[in-house]
Image (cartoon, rainbow, N blue to C red; front, side):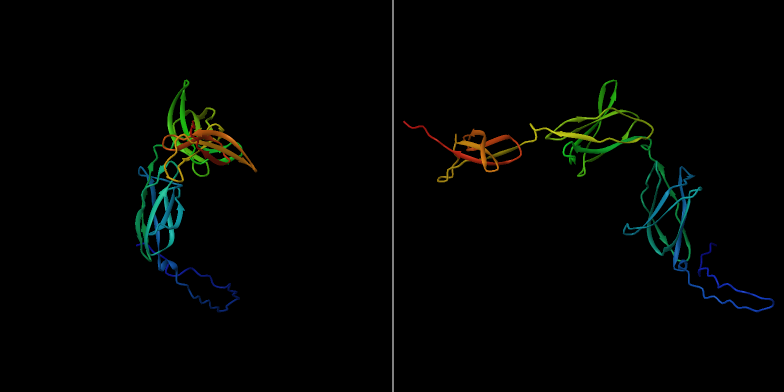
Length: 286
């Protein structure tokens, strides 16, 4: 039957003994936390073989981390001073899949054994590209840029995956087989950019940053609206509409158009800036 500490080991003061002296050493032992807690122990294996160097982690029932440890040469682990109660346990190691958590109950004053089996990750030997997509000038991350990864073989490109950058401009392209690849980044309002060929082998994790240059011809907006009669509230067809750009106190016409039969106008390809719309309508007189 396994044993567990009831009281913690305590040391007495140093005792000096001369000749036939009689000395006394009394100790007051402190109740061991092990008497109100338990021990979690077990073995992590893969394919029935011990798995050294695996990380075993314990969570409480609210999935808050409680403790972790690393398995020894024989795949064994021990976590002491675990308060009695229910816990969730899992394990991990590079090259293996993380299994679902396993529930375990810890009882006071006794060890609890939990063995965990890990399965090899079939994608563990594949390669990864990662990096950021930035605006070239000023240097700023670009969110929601599209990054396409193509494999390259004898000048033939094959799309492997498409991903999108996050708010920090970051992208991640995992699980790429050994071979040659290029990355192409796109976003509305920028010129497309293409990386040099990247040769990936032997489970490489390779950084690759991409830079986009703003395209002034596409990095524009629109201004539109309706021209109506203040008296009848009906749309006015063929009204003249002028788009003025404001720079300082100067207003300059940059586009002129006419409304359609529904009184609608639309200015496209409008660059960033400050604008004002002016409109009027004329009729033919005899």
